[in-house]
Image 1 (cartoon, rainbow, N blue to C red):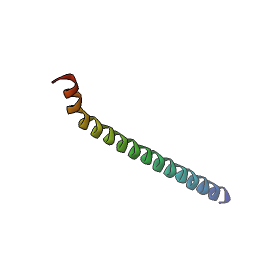
Image 2 (spheres, rainbow, N blue to C red):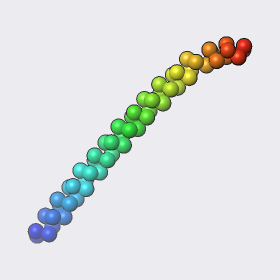
Image 3 (cartoon, rainbow, N blue to C red):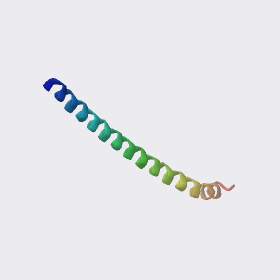
Image 4 (cartoon, one colour):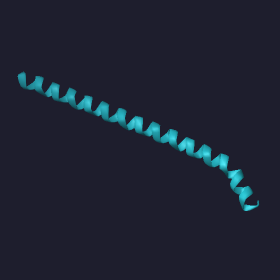
Length: 56
């Protein structure tokens, strides 16, 4: 029975680590998506200006 308690604690610890890892990964994806959106917006804003520079 004592061994089972240790396994429960270990499983809970692994779940905690997994939850933390998933939260960090989600946060990184969210930051990446925000950066990608900002970059896309910048490129779309710049597109007409680039065309003007090229003489189109």
